[in-house]
Amino acid sequence: MPELSRTQVVVYAAVAVALLLVGARAIRGEQAAEPSYAVAAGSESGGESFSVSEASGDLIVHVAGAVRQPGVYRMPAGSRVNDAVARAGGAAPRAELEGVNLAARLADGQQVVVPERLPAGSAAGVGVAATEAGPISLGTATVEQLEEIEGIGPVTAGDIIAFRDEHGGLASIDQLDEVPGIGPATMESLRARLQP
Image 1 (cartoon, helix red, strand yellow):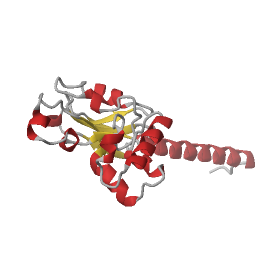
Image 2: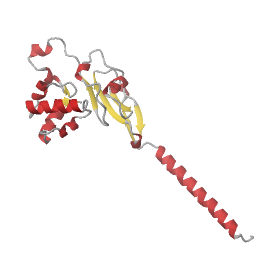
Image 3: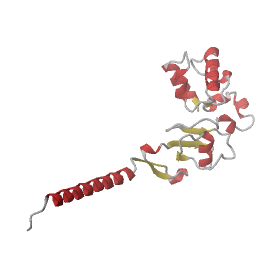
Image 4: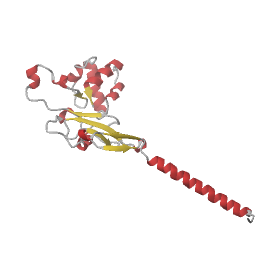
């Protein structure tokens, strides 16, 4: 076998390094193309099955209640509650859309619940306040409705409304932690009685 010159050795070494780099990049590219986690909604719920990369910036939201196709959906970052309701096939005929802030921004992992319209006279006939039938929409809650929540007085209720108005609505109940006078116990009460 003939002896290789120094130039030939350098060329062969450069080609070998280039091939290794190309191979490593191809392997990393295949791994990056694989989804890092999957979210699936059963076909009986009307949702869709899909895979999402953590780095994609998309949001995963659960749309439930009075919509045509409740389920778990992937939404682009910056989407609004209205977009999620539309993605779930739109509001069902029995939906009470006034009970949801359709303009609120979605947050990853959020559940959007569209309440159902109560039959006429049902709340008055039973003697139960409408707020006890389900969660109150943070986007439309009045001071009086907020005062019904344990630990919320008129001052704190007013502060919550002012905070909501200042920020153009709220995407998550957790944002209320920034309101002065709301501690951990009050946050638990708010989570139990409110929806974004």
